[in-house]
View 1 (cartoon, helix red, strand yellow):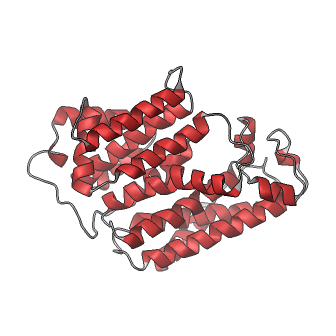
View 2: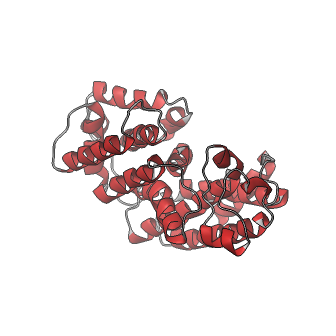
View 3: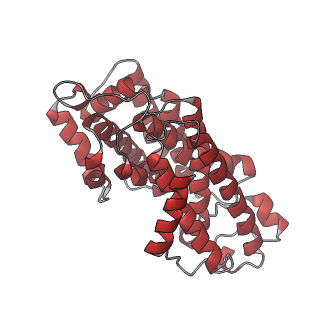
Length: 310
């Protein structure tokens, strides 16, 4: 379930480092951590094989290593949930991470990542409940493939795997206001719903079906990942979810107007990229989920410019 990293991972390379409640890099090393601890934490990120670490070089050091720590946490718990960590009891391993996070807030650390996470928590006032929410989202996937959830479960899933990461991220971006949390709430849901609509075929191959039961029932569609891609009525379900995503994009932009504009730059850029994906999905048609969507550079650029102008 790599989508949990989208909100933070793809936005951060674009951050300029400005914003309210900006944490200035302290004397010496970033976050006051040892070079060895910082290197180990960054190593977790670079070994993930993404471009995340390289893109983060634009951030000032405290923010950069704060996000390295959050990304490393997300990557490790995500690997557990997806069965890539080599642990037999995934639920127990994730419960262990909850205890580990609680220990950080009690002032106890055991390794390099703990120490960098603890420093980021202190510097950026990151909240324990947001880390716990991410873990709870991982547990939802680890307990077995999600198939046709009810509406409340789908919304809770989106909050945990996307909006919670957003709530951690906006604080490191530089805005810890109530409005910034609203950005995370709405933009996280908009991004995750877009991901769900984009990945219907890929999820089906893994036995997953994130489309809500109520909409499937409305259009007479079986709760079966094996047949979802050829189901009559799929376009109706997807059109409704797309409208919801657009509503969340709109509400996210409204919340951004109450935030520090510099701190919201990565959120605006991410929204623009995802809105371009949504437009490409709509152009392709909702009844053809087996056809991959490609977004042209020109379309993405136009969408990003529109997001920046909001």
